Length: 204
Image (cartoon, rainbow, N blue to C red; front, top):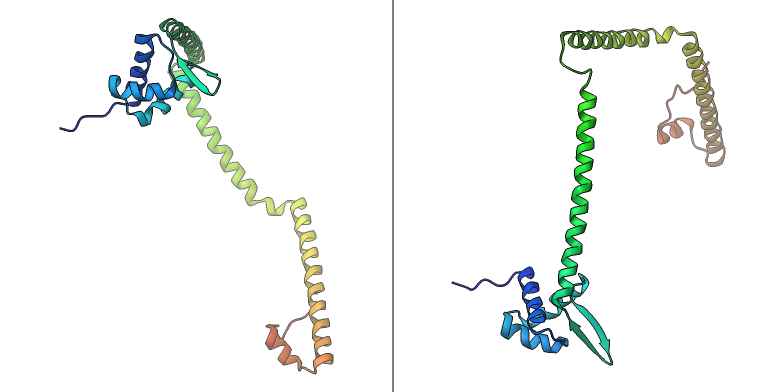
């Protein structure tokens, strides 16, 4: 069967083993030779693995002259893991406190909401009142057209619409008159060409 390749995390772990076991300082080219032979990490992936470890603060790096050097000591890794553990424990404690506070809030909110006969009756009455409110609102909307304010608003709206319609009618008559003078068109031809009703007139 085909041998299964190393996962990204396995490669990272094996790369750290190189540093911990040798306690030495390396250049990239050194690791690209050592990693495939001793840890089964392909030379093509060494740079990516190394950079990920540097980004996570697990491997130190420094430029000396024109070369970059890499190193990592077990003591630093231990401190880093310890800090991470403390950070996670702090987050866990904070989350536990929030959970406890929420639980207390939930318990407190349940007070007065127990499923009693009185509460059931009150909820039923509330539902009935809400339904009645909707019925009354529907009746009010039905008679709203008789409201003097609504009637006046409708009258004013109709007046504005009427004036606008007559203004456009006047404009159409003016254009028809101009077209007849300018081009000698017959009125019926103008009406037909522009879809103007023959009985177009002002609104009284």
